[in-house]
Image 1 (cartoon, rainbow, N blue to C red):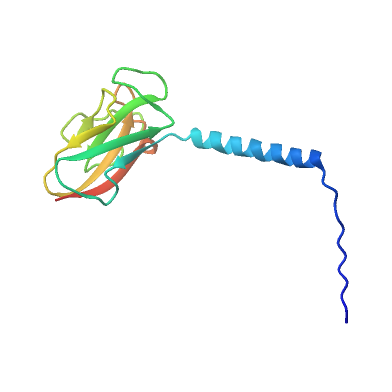
Image 2: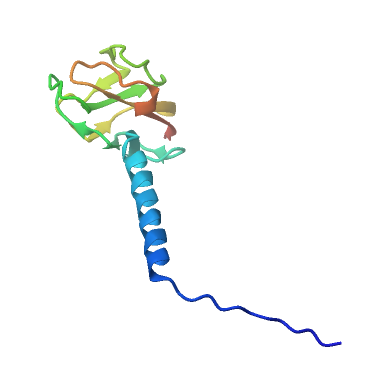
Length: 147
């Protein structure tokens, strides 16, 4: 028994190809815009689960917003705060000033931290020029051990 397979060739249609390529580029641009619209913060050092010796470097990063010093109330700007053994602060709430809420109001993106040996939860909280929190969406928590 012999099978016969019949193939029908479709002519290449440049206009259809260009329309498809254009639609794909529009979708990619929309996806990139959506990603850019989601600001975030991150630690570049130390990493979650790190074992460090005191003093150690903490490095902050932000995307989708700009770093500005205390007092600058330009929309979508602010500065970093490091919270020790506490979690994110509610959006709009003032960030306390004490030994466990460290403020980097000059716009610093790194700091040298000294802590006694132990396990710690470090939360980076981004806040505006009046030290009001941008909320949990603009925070990042890691756990470290200081030897």
